Length: 518
Image (tube, one colour):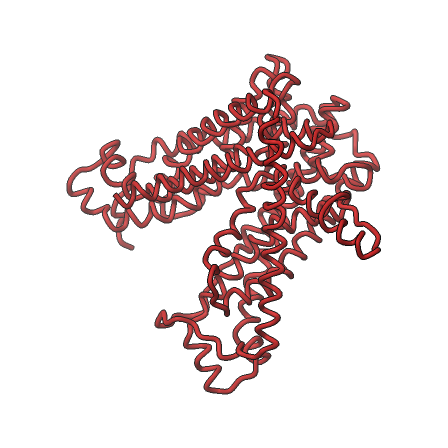
């Protein structure tokens, strides 16, 4: 095997990886120290476990099943605005959960648009709270993810396969069995496992739309043990239970991550002779229109309802917005300080075991890490005084797996393309970063920074554990307004939060691309 052509010094990457591992293991240590193994779990705790698994199964199943016709329709149709619609399919991933929940309430809630329409038709109203609301919100967030995964696979089928199918005069059903079903069989298990993991660790959705004995997730039970009972031993025990659930599911998901390879082609534009019938066009139009309405109506509702409340928001909302901005900035800086050296170290290695350290965040959740750190900090210092730095750090750890997935492939390609030249020029250390790596990774760095900033500014996780009544980020302040039924002001805060999340993502991502183009 040829020697490795180039590698940036591994010292920084090893130090960053050690810090990440230490931070997460410290949280585990805090949980283990406070857990009481002989205490066991009560009926309410097991009910939370059953509800967590059941809602995650339903959410993953519905997201994947609904994504199949949407992705298939997008793969075989070309129409004005298709590119923009595909881009918008990624919006829910960076959308603050609390904003999306408010939008869903505006459309599907007790006084929402759908119930207004049902009332005009003389039909009974629907309720969004409980299992149906949690599943609805999870489908809203994860349908676009499943659609993007399937669409990526569908577009990888070479056009020559469809041309051959047309020459053989295969029926649409035969084309589906010969070309599309094998693809689905390879992608859907991984997509299902990934969405199942995400839904297992969902907190803000369960907090706002769940609750009660029959709609409590494990994450929500940890929060309730903390905030209402201050029973740290029970919270630690539930955290261990959540670790087993989420960790086991995350390992399964990593083994089932979609590996799509259907053979090479000549990169010709795909033409679908099997989808030119009127009924097929109508079904595709229904699938695309239905998905667009489902995903865009809540965003439209947030924009419309927020315009009225934007000018009447109290000063506390603006203070919380400034707090969220600096928390997001700090979190993004911490993420890049960890991710860049780790990516350089991982890209210079042949094995991928080092990346597993960065992926630990997939097996944990912000609430679990916050619980462990709270237990460790509480005897030494008031956790409320560290609420904002801890929130920024936890958000950075949660964004680290995504950042590594974005940075490592391009870092590895840069080493392969320019490593030998850099070695001949004795370009090492900071000079290698300055003149070789950073100019070629600015697009990826901007994307990773934008993703981290958007996720951090909209996070309602660990801040709910640590914050005192006098301090809050904008998502927490918005939740407090909703809980106090100050819905106009909450709508204004939601619109502000939406603008901040999308604006931060656009600024970082656009800034990275502009520098790369220059």
